[in-house]
Length: 207
Image (tube, rainbow, N blue to C red; front, top):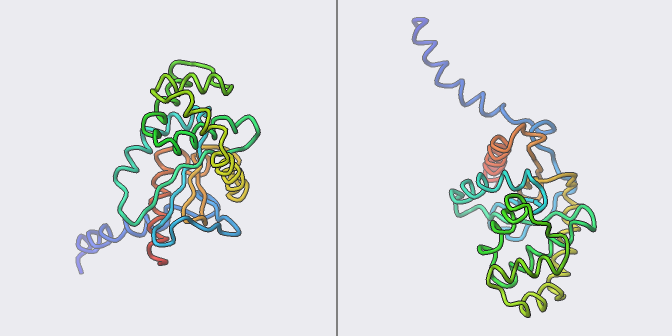
């Protein structure tokens, strides 16, 4: 076989082998032991652990939005506020308050912008209440939900997941309750999402 033809054939196969070896366990992503249960066993679960006070989470948000918009139907993408210390609980409660009130679309980006673009200090319940009211939420609805058992239970669950996933910093991404990656492991936010796509494909094959 002519050398030129051999070179062409090798060129066809090289990208696939390079892709298969591109991401390594223990380097680009870590294995969670024991694996954690997922919310919907019928779909591949991807969780973003974030905190509104984190500038890296704010920078990741446009990339996450674009990435999530293209996800196939068999992938279930969830956001979970990390609770690494008592100081993080306030903004975790903000996420779940918005979720239970059905105003996540209105609150999520606006709260990131309030903290990182407008440089407002949202570090107390009154400050958070004022922000929600500015976004069109009734003060009474905020009070009843923010201090509800439902929000408290969800924050406790988020705290437990933060611990069980082995989260040390945010943003971090969890796939199928079994794998964890972040920009620290992957090298950048963009590459982190590539690692997540790779892990989703691995989970799909394992199913």
